[in-house]
Image (cartoon, rainbow, N blue to C red):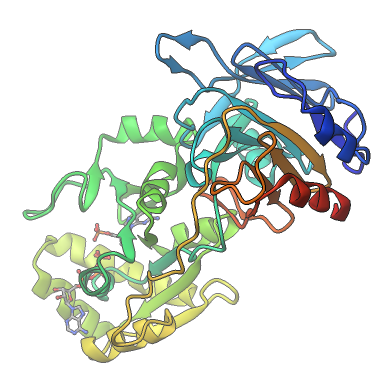
Length: 416
Ligand SMILES: Nc1ncnc2c1ncn2[C@@H]1O[C@H](COP(=O)(O)OP(=O)(O)OP(=O)(O)O)[C@@H](O)[C@H]1O
Ligand SMILES: Nc1nc2c(ncn2[C@@H]2O[C@H](COP(=O)(O)O)[C@@H](O)[C@H]2O)c(=O)[nH]1
């Protein structure tokens, strides 16, 4: 049984190499090799309770696959779980370290740290919830994003209030900061709407199947059609290094609030129902019957918008420029600065050959001995003690400290 508090030391996962003797001397605080995570060929095997999670797969020519299968030690039966989230691009192998007993940290060999740090969640709250809904064993991939990263923004409000108009203004003024989460919908495209840009327009039966397969962060029936945010839509924006904006209805906002996606929730109100009706009609995109339906729904949505704890901010969109200014203020954007500007973090390479030591949530990735003062560190300390977010979406907050010399690495071990 895994014991979170014990020290562990893992050898190089694929080559069967042992850590250099002089490093092992310094690692005397760590117990000998443990069996929580072992490897064979291009796979790692991580034991959690009665289950062994085997990650990786066959070498299909130039590419390795990142498949997941589970061996139940009690029943001695292999199973293939439902895998949610975007899986890592295969590399030259990986290391696996169990964290928190609910997720496996995966480090892709010979990859930049920014691209090569992944988590396979096996029993986080998100995975447990999906287990229940889907009735199958579920695991979920989530990429590690260094630093805190900006929170996604959920914008809700009745149809015609001006959500899309405000979002367009924001994306136009801050093109490198924000990215739009392109939803799926079963409604027909409007004249100027482009598939894949405004929405992914889809068939109801296809979308229903994808919802069942767990591909959506949230979905809802809105004004008679299905709408939903796929996990992929949110991840695509984050992968582009942008802050994700979701334009979704109140039911969707409620689902996202209940998920592990930490976001800022903003509700946009009209100055009056009369003005809302005027805007909907003047937009001219709906039939009279649809306008009536949207107005009826607006009353309920306005009530729900006031539900305690659901929205962090409520803004009234009376004068467009005033509301836009308030929105920017709410998001901490001033008139001139592009808020995407974050201090850049150095992106080191995960060594092709490395050993891993772990104590609690601190992981030493030792890439072999390095000359004192060498330009590129080969050892790193990864501190996973303040992880945030996770599947669906990215896991924010793993801290990486480069270790420049063997002496430093021994000092770190002392501090562990
Ligand atoms: N402050 C405003 N004053 C006057 N008209 C506005 C204002 N904000 C938006 N509009 C107009 O109202 C109409 C509806 O706006 P928009 O399409 O952005 O609403 P929406 O909330 O995104 O609607 P939906 O939820 O149906 O997508 C548009 O024609 C837009 O130009
Ligand atoms: N729950 C979700 N609601 C969504 C999503 N995408 C859009 N919407 C909401 O639907 C209505 C109608 O939109 P329209 O484009 O047909 O006018 C509006 O309130 C949107 O916010 C979604 O992915 N999930």
